[in-house]
Image (cartoon, one colour):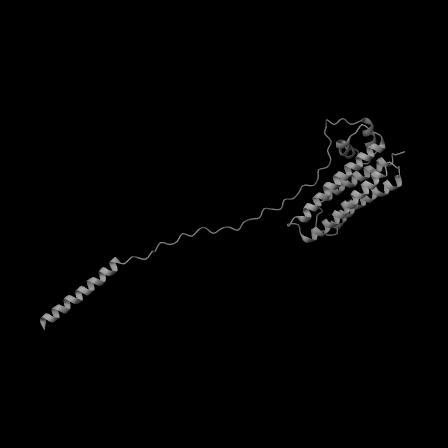
Length: 214
């Protein structure tokens, strides 16, 4: 009986030691935390590129102005603008008809630059829908003004002063109408204000030169 108890005690101790050994040789759990990549910041969209308006025509200081052309420009309301706008178109002829043709050509080029700016702003996703509506009106005004200038230019050869005056006055109205649309909305500033002012002055100069035709 005593031997039996002794045998059971040995078996119990052996079982306990075996249990400890089994735990010691088990593969420990991987407690290493997976490295988290830093959270990405939301990408910031670049601000819209705002196209600068076409620059007011500026004459080079080295540009030799024919005194006769300068004398014609002096008879306009904006003589410095008259001379600077004519600088890229100076030709050998200096009579009023030739100067008027150059002045109209300069006005058409500047109006086309304004129209291109309007088209860029209209297609810009950052431009608000209400602004796009007024820009669309300005696009029509600029297209109409270009037509008016071209008709006036074609009337030079026939000497139809009445038609020239009508078309040039119509161009001035087109530029003013563009700005008037934005003026209706007090919170909207016209992106064409400076452009339209210069264009109106250029068309006014054309009218003054047309009055010098025989």
